[in-house]
Length: 105
Image 1 (cartoon, rainbow, N blue to C red):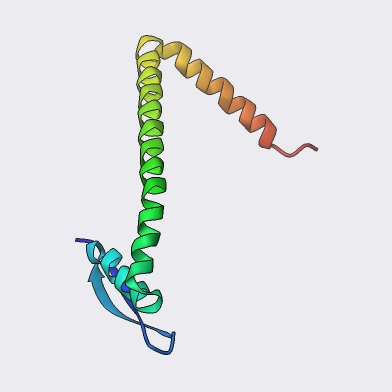
Image 2: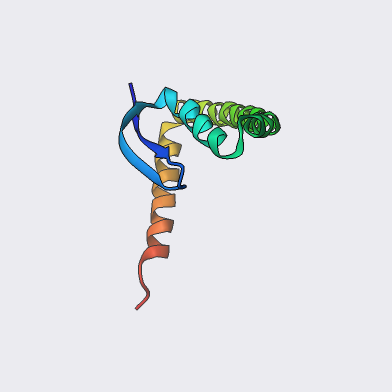
């Protein structure tokens, strides 16, 4: 199980760090600490406003992952069908990059 350093916010707005807490408990610990400062009702309002943005970000991340996976599959298939062309293309790209990175005399 992953752990993270725990931070406690004190009444004088300073922080104390020490020990470790399971990473799964970190959101609840953070929610409780922020709730003590600005109030639990305000925290609930902020969470309600942030949730649609988080959901949309997760949807976009999943779509990007799907597209990247499709491209990776296409590239792998091309490499299997055309190994010699793939090696020559890689060699050509390597030469081009090498020529661009070599300082001119």
